Length: 262
Ligand SMILES: Cc1cc2nc3c(=O)[nH]c(=O)nc-3n(C[C@H](O)[C@H](O)[C@H](O)COP(=O)(O)OP(=O)(O)OC[C@H]3O[C@@H](n4cnc5c(N)ncnc54)[C@H](O)[C@@H]3O)c2cc1C
Ligand code: FES
Image 1 (cartoon, protein in one colour):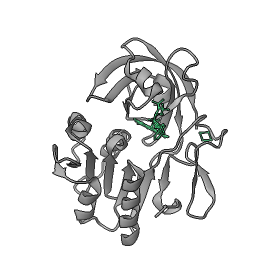
Image 2 (cartoon, protein in one colour; image 1 turned 90 degrees about the vertical axis):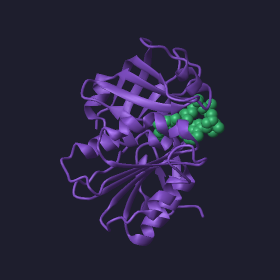
Image 3 (cartoon, protein in one colour; image 1 turned 60 degrees about the horizontal axis):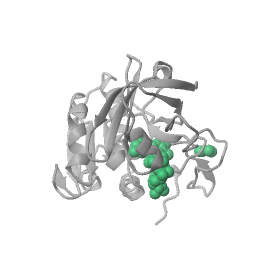
């Protein structure tokens, strides 16, 4: 697998809601090998402050050499990125990690909660391009409120897969959690479920799928310093009580391979 460090020019800046931003970057080398579920490390700001790169899922990757990231402004690094302007360049390293394993013979159920929606757009594109029958494919998106979901809906609709939405406050889609929609679906036994979102959401998905012997892949987060297996900062516990690096063994894992806390 080849990684690249690129000076990526910002070609589009979209403020999708109060705190959520999408950047489109010119990144022709990273595009070449990028797979859904992989991530990039981005240095926020030209100086060494903040020192560490920040990890972001590949939200989209296009054959015209462009990648997108979609992020929430939560701290120093993301605040710098949220103030970037078109034509500025960012130091981007990637693609990193193991992405989603897609099986074109299985119905797909994509579940994105909050910022976990980010990698699902690239995954939806890949699944829609497989030339498979999409009648049993499904995307479920959710967030706290309308602004977390609605600005992305048209982008997902272009792929022609069935789409269901939920918000905690009921301002868009059903009032409730994405996991409630998942639990109400009659999934075929050979469905491949893909999830990204908060830990408690992923744990509910894992238990639901495990009880039904449905395959479930989850993309998990961890604080990361290097993104390359060198610092041990991203270790999480595996089901076998061993530890795995989120950055090189993941961020996507079969949910059965991880230790779940409760
Ligand atoms: C593989 C991977 C993919 C990611 N993809 C996305 C994405 O597509 N969109 C997106 O918005 N975010 C994503 N994140 C989270 C993102 O990296 C953090 O939000 C970002 O690093 C915060 O940097 P900051 O300097 O703004 O915040 P800091 O000032 O460093 O921290 C601000 C707050 O955010 C918390 N925080 C920092 N890093 C993380 C983290 N990794 N997970 C959860 N909380 C964190 C801190 O504990 C603190 O409370 C991803 C993380 C990983 C590991
Ligand atoms: S982030 Fe350094 S080992 Fe994973």
